[in-house]
Amino acid sequence: MPNNDDLDFKEVDEDGNLIEDAGSTPTDDSNKDDKRDGYERYCYLCRRPESECGNLIHMPNEINICQDCMQKTFDGLGDRLQIFDMNNFDLSKLSGLGMPRFQEVKPKKKKEKEAKKEGKEDKDKLDLEHLPAPHKIKALLDEYVIGQDYAKKVLSVAVYNHYKRVITNTMDDIEIDKSNILMIGPTGCGKTYLVKTLARLLDVPLAITDATTLTEAGYIGDDVESVISKLLANADNDVEKAERGIVFIDEIDKIAKKSNSKSRDVSGEAVQQGLLKLLEGSEVEVPVGASSKNAMVPLANIDTTNILFICGGAFPDLEDIIKKRLLKSSTMGFGSDLKDHYDQEDVLKEVSLEDLREFGMIPEFIGRLPITCTLSHLDKEAFIRILKEPKNAILKQYQKLLALDEVDLSFDDSALDAIAEQAMEKKTGARALRAIIEKFMLDIMYQIPRDDNIGRVTINRDYIEGKGVPAIELRTAAVPKIEAQ
Image (cartoon, rainbow, N blue to C red; front, top):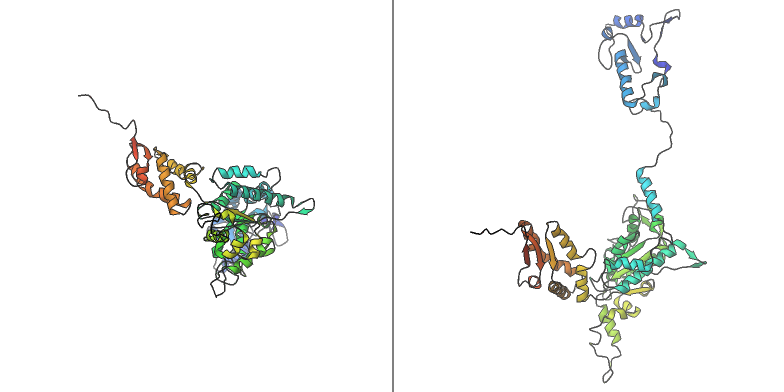
């Protein structure tokens, strides 16, 4: 690229004397030579001949530009880049305009995303001062989860000790081992909901995965390392952050050993064997941004020593195994245990390692889950509290929806009793509540927007059981006035 002085085109005569007519590059003799050939030069931009626009400025690659177009070009540069100063002309600012690039090395500024990420990392750094105590964690869980006090205490203490272990690493040169948790409870009692609520309330890198999709390496399905891949993805691919996270493996009872199968158990005992190294702590290679390893996906080494594992499952038929063990020494006569002695009691709290082994869990797997937490069945009172007490209770959600239509929704105590009784009959836990409410609220949500005069709707027991209709009150302003005749 020519420098600033080369932009001034000057002419000299045959003796080398300077001609004062600056800016006219071609001499008259050269113009005459061009015209001898029968051709005349023209401007590359405005397409005017040299006889009309005057002397042209010669550029490389036989490009000729008239003085007017050249002036307009520099004027445009001045308006666009504010650099129209021929004395201090910055050639580096011509990059991107079809001119050669002259990049000036400047320190790169941090992008907004990187700045936010660094700010988030600073926020994520835990210390003992800002670590919530177990009773505070349980108080937060009480606002969303009804009952299961023992399970909430176990989770609160486990999370609190886990992060104390991660923060301090060692305490008086004594290494603190992690305590993985096994949650056992009937379906719909709140195992998964407890962990999801804990992850939402605390700023914790947590991954929730399903054990039903796991298979032995080399078979169709997700490998065992995929649970760590999900944790790494939830930690924004930050290895250091993922190594202090929590992994919740749901439906862990589905990988129990199949006793009556002659084929290779690739989704049962083989998965338990593959999870052993993750639960105890080891370095594994996991793909970044994918669930399976291949040549096109980068791998990251993650140490699972500081990752807390929580396994949960319903373990169907486990109660029968426990009852069989408890009634094994039953005898006849006075003082003997009857067969129906434990039918009315919650026998899951009597679970032992022998019961889990008979269910199909291998001893090595059970030994790496030292804390066994059992959740109890939900009774009628618990169902009623779930309907109305949590912050995101189902009844509060429908009351909010109807409040947008300026309609008050209320439920009688008899209606709540009827809903709880129907939920207990379904034997699907708290999941049955939404199914029941969705059924009888369908007609109400469909009819109320049609009539603007409705001001209050009260749900009673007769409507829940299909024997009557809800009590409807009209707005005071909507009542027509009767004029005296």
